[in-house]
Amino acid sequence: MTKVIVAGAGGRMGQRISQMVLQQEGLELAAAFEHPDSSVLGEDVGIIGGFGTTGVIIAPGLESVIESGDVIIDFTFHEATMAFAEIAAAHGKAMVIGTTGLNQEQLTTLSGLAGENFPCVHSPNMAVGVNVLFKLVEKAASVLGEAYDVEIVEAHHRMKKDAPSGTALKLGEMAALALGRDLDDVGVMERNGIIGERTDQEIGIQTIRGGDIVGEHTVYFAGVGERIEISHRATNRDNFARGAVLAAAWINGKANGMYTMFDVLDLDNF
Image 1 (cartoon, helix red, strand yellow):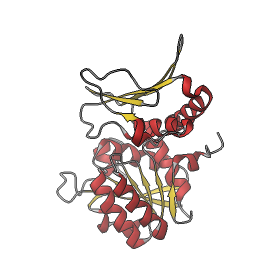
Image 2 (image 1 turned 60 degrees about the vertical axis):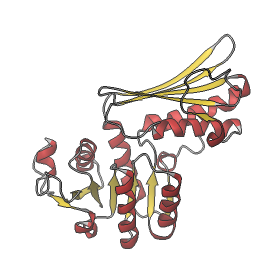
Image 3 (image 1 turned 120 degrees about the vertical axis):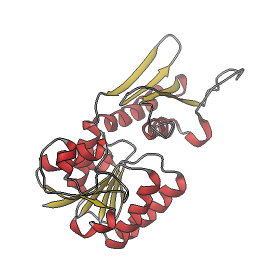
Image 4 (image 1 turned 90 degrees about the horizontal axis):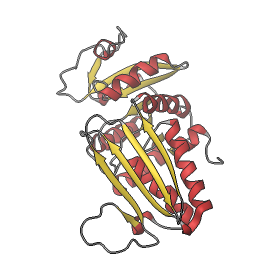
């Protein structure tokens, strides 16, 4: 039985993950925590989440519960995630990270910590459907080649703090990889004013923020006389939580290092 610790258990994602851990065979909800000044400290995670008494009380910070579990699931904020990774490294605990907004320096640090101290699944999007989307975009780009312009549009709720989304950036990276390009060199994240004609190499990523949109991503392959659109639309957060729970069941016992949902879902040869 793999014992799971849920970060940010007072938030919407934390609550859904906690409930799904309870429903997943082979997993036990061992602990849940929030930041030390949270208003839900001391509350039963199931009571505040609306799924009944669990006996798991929301604790103040990871260090107070770190010895209770085997795997930490974290969908919080990039600065908090890096602090949790340091604690996980010190105690040799596995992590499943769905946090977005990590910059390259943070990703490098995380990779170094995991390589030496713990196994870690990190993905910009844990949903099974989105990870299939990543592979579909890679395959489409490799087949369609240079004759098609690649554009990505993503939409999320008004409270999302980072832009473009980690999922949109990953989609751009998958397309760029298949086309032999580097997204850092060819990515265009905004357009305004007299910008001139589109270049052949650029990959555009545009952002929409509004209302309670859970998450929508569309990749356009625009050619002469035809256009292919590949889309994923999330209508609730359950798919993200479900993927994270699958990753937690998979990661325990793996060798130290960084893994992705491609590893969890065996998509590398898709």
